[in-house]
Image (cartoon, rainbow, N blue to C red):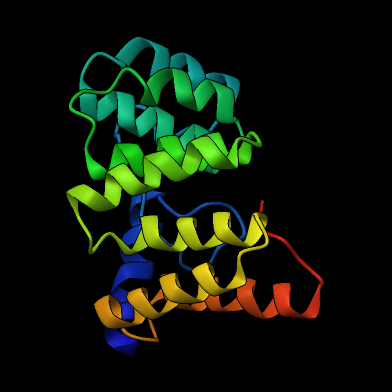
Length: 176
């Protein structure tokens, strides 16, 4: 397991895929050689993305990184253009929508992503966070159990959702 962790961390570092301040993210983001030399969401990066965002993969790339860097409305403009709406695209539409405060609408995107791929543990983790935002601890714990079945208790998705649940129980943190 430690070897897998270090291999993923190294891959993320080499691709420039890990968000600032993260050791290992729930989801290693897509790479784009043309734009990865710029800081994600910087003016230079956004100009690069605007030049290349012609294919669905590039639209997802732009939307993913904008969402991961807190530029949710901008992310949605790219993510909503990507076709087909894969489980990963739907997960990040849900993520950005939830971060903009529309938790109920985000639930629908997560449900759609999970209907396509019930093993999408990233969508399950974000769904669990959404349930916590709504004060639905038991539903969040159900997603945590589903994640454990699919990737164990040592995967990043499990650890992050477990931490959010523990914080929620202490009353000290609501993901959002």
